[in-house]
Image (cartoon, each protein chain N blue to C red):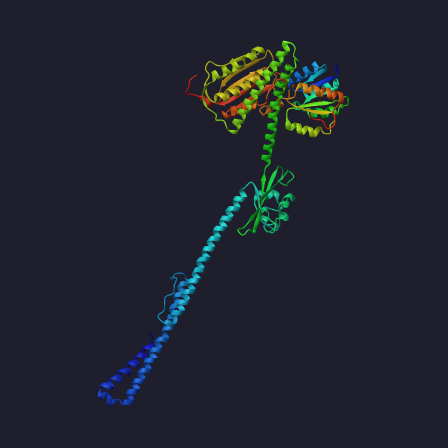
Length: 135
Length: 478
């Protein structure tokens, strides 16, 4: 039974809730946060094994800026990140920007909870393979 | 006939008379010898010849004098355009030749006048064209070749090394500021001018003082296919670039706003299929998410369509008398179930008499519903939402006040932007499309009004639709 702690950061309450239920159902310990700053704070306070974050979030810090902040924070700088985005154009830009950032996987919305779970299991087991940053 | 020729003729006549008289009158004949008669005849002939010669020799100078007078008159511009034929044939040929010459001179004079008039016209047209070119907001530079600039209008100034007035006869290198533009001209000398228009874009460092500029280059060819010159046109495309960027961002936002509810719907359905919700309460939760997100998608589509059609002018605003009380009560009825569920005190504080408004009922209902729906959405359980109207001297106001989460002051200026959603964590707890207020504002503006907002974070907001009194229909009663 997986025991890893996963932090889910998304401003959309329904998505947060569905992801939480899916991962909890698979046996993970799930924490949620509704914004980048709150998510960063939560990650610092209790470093998770994996962070799932939305890209497009208000509150002065989007998913990409959150990843950069995570990489600057010693306790979580190696933590793998799955980033969700609903924008194709943004996905292209993110891919370019995260090209040099290790341990980040992109997932396009609308995603399947099954696929998300598979990605979570793979990333937790093997880490993010180089050159396979986009799902 | 002058005095000399008159005397000669007189004497000749006298000799002839004496000769005839000597032949006819024996007395006279006796008086004059035969020798005398001969002398008389010879004298008569001589004097006649002298008289005749004198007359003829006097007719040439007089003809010349007349000719001179005619020419003098002609040069002063008051005489006829031809010289009169003189009485003496010696001068006739001369006059004829003079008349032919005169005719040629007059022809050239007419051509010269026509040319002068034509030049004046051309000069006026050229001044007009140059002045119009100077009024263009696009920069224009004409060159005979890369070695000789002809003209630059005022708008071309930011792209030039010299003043537009000083470009004439300078080389392109001396005139044109940007190397990329010079590159357009490179190789476009007389031997190698290319047909068609070539365009490059200069960014903010293109010497144009910021923004984006499109530079088009075209070569002109004469009827014989010989190059006649080149033109450069500098067009500021900053606004187009900005519009393209805005459109791309808009589409990106639309895609995102569609994918977000779709994600919730798809994920909820999959969770139900995978039997992740085992108890009825969990199942109801997923069904409810699907229901809410489907409604959100539908609202998003409606608002986007309304917004797009109003902005593009594609929709005809159908103004007709609408009873305001009925419209507002219908809106209240729509949100009443939500209010009851959240135990929100929904009050329609409406006066006994409400006017009939000249509005587009369908659009106006969308505007009221978007604001009223937000008020209910962002007001926590147990709060209050009040709908009221206020009739002022200059305006008629419909207000929707709530005791909701409020809007941070720094975010107030942006709440009517498309897809803008407040960053307040509490605000983000409520799903929304981010186009509801933008649509409402567009609709109210179409009706000549505006929306005023007062809000305090944590205390609530008041949205006031301020409408001109001209919108009140005075011919139809409540």
